[in-house]
Image (cartoon, rainbow, N blue to C red; front, side, top):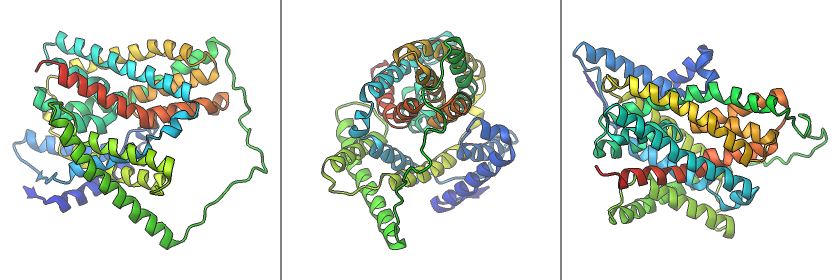
Length: 398
């Protein structure tokens, strides 16, 4: 048995991460459905640990003490993306799409709870297998797993990963056909040609020196760390009121506050792309560490409820897309948004973007869809979904 400290564990997570990238390159199916490389690489280690456990041995003992910091750093970077100025762009459409997504997240949880009760499981199992992992993806599922464990859902981390991975595959499979059905049934076409960009269109290129890039990166790291520091106080203040919530919420709120302060005053000079890059690196390492530490044998006996839940959730989102299509305008962009809606309500924003790109390559550009869906799927739904999950956990009797 190999015992690793925190640094060694992070190094092994890096190896698992690049193993995941390699597998996604050599196995086209993994890349086709946008399965996250950190999850793939971490699952390889988790499967090896499961095989060793079945033989009564332990391969490695990990020190996951850096995992919470990586998780909080990622969600803080999401907070910096929550700009009120962005929300004002096509504001009515973005707000309406967010309202539809948030309402559907509640439906996901209610359906999941009904399935859980039908199998004699804890009702919050359905919330974990509902919007926590389907709308939120593996990162949100793993972030909330400790709260579900304390609420009585055993094996929450393993359940979260299994549900999220299955949802990603279903979202990739289902989004395109449903949107195509809307397009063909209603005879919809793109209002603009695919080559709408003028050949002489000017493109501004920002030239930066190496010292400027270093300064921007350093400033972004410090601002992110300060937001995490202030966020810890905010979370502690909220928790003191008796509300149970994940550790990242306070930091995410501080990140959003600083972003909107900078948008209005320009005091900080934030580089949102740099903050997003740092957050994505932290997310990759967080997922790899979390997946390597999974105890997959805890899923024994839960395959049937997870499978039934996924089938019913897929049917529900396909039917709900009728509401999305009609509410968003019943035009070509609305149909493409419906495909994206399925992509991120069953998986991740990457899933949604892949579905929409496939559609526009075949049927023509959909500029409104590519503005609205990413704004909601990548940023704003994380806020509302966190509130929804927290509400179910806090107000359901344990």
